Length: 530
Image 1 (cartoon, rainbow, N blue to C red):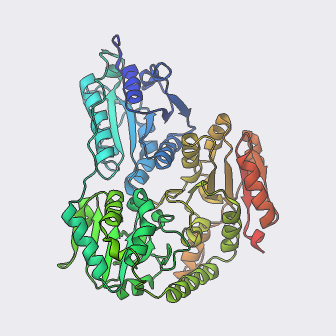
Image 2 (tube, helix red, strand yellow):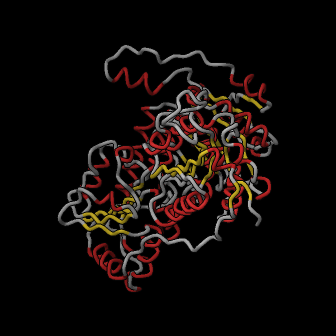
């Protein structure tokens, strides 16, 4: 290819690396990045705010497993996208943000979009943030990001390029090179773990989001070992909901620590066992633990009898099912199925008591949603309950801002997910307060003609914060805000809008929204559950 401005060459390079969609907002500083988008055959999705662009890239990445890419401008464009980058970092999502930057910031002050240290600002929420001052450097850093996405725990990356460098003529990027793979366990490690699990009297698997890639092997593995299992929120769907020794996604229930304490071997696969997984300092086990993860950072603090295995969880699970001898292919259950069922029922009752009515709405939706529906939820009481009681028919199909816990995630992330999966059902679930953080992205969804149902759980207040204040013996304060007429606002954007008056009407509204030619805002209040 003939020499072109570097901005155009970057888009062509991304296309050659498999990028088909870029989310962002053009501006005078990053306009050169937009020179080559159409030439490269890349789709650009115009967000209404850089925060929305970042969440769209996140949703696209979670839906496809491919990196999500966003273009933003110098200064405020970058600062606006830092929250999505923080979310992607905490939830291990591969997102690459490419921004412009000023050519010189030390000798001149008062320039448009100037920051004291733009690169360092992004580094606080990224695996790395670097500046490329030449075309070869830009190409090398882009490939570095893609190599890291392919071979380690996914973390977002930021690359900034000076404005003049973006506009300078440059040779084309080199052809793509083979990517490195994820770390793999040795045969000895696999066989040792298999032997330990088969020898245990009450083995317990704890599956995290990293186990999603090996979900196909998990039912056989549990049958072959007679082990019980429990999952983090991000791992819902890796264990079939009707599996008799499955404790569900109730890991954050305080007394799940008692379950862990009953095990004589814990195998934690693809999970950091973080605060937002447990909501307590430790899992609660006293037995040895085997941890399988691609991130060595999670191994710190392990006990003397524990074992760390640096490996891709998905491949490790598949290898275990192959390594288990045929004579042990049908291990008798090592836990009592009736006790497991009673515990799950008790936990479900606790959720229903804590958040009345939400369970009935969840059950109604789950009954009619197609199995391949991908759900993106926000920080809302509806999602908090659903994450515990909603057994997913497929893994990797419910996405939530788990670690960073930011409001405003659901709508733009669902847009990114819907763009990534044309023709497949996508559902957004947001609270009335959180939706208003990014409601302007409804314009993008209308512009794209997405058949996207947007369920708004409207209790007219910050219900979770109010409950927290009451528990802390604080008089509820600043938890009620005046909401807009969500249905009128949706119609003003050009979307459909409906407020069902029964659970049956809600089911019909969601199914109709999947077949619409525009998004549909569905306002749901607690009264619908009766």
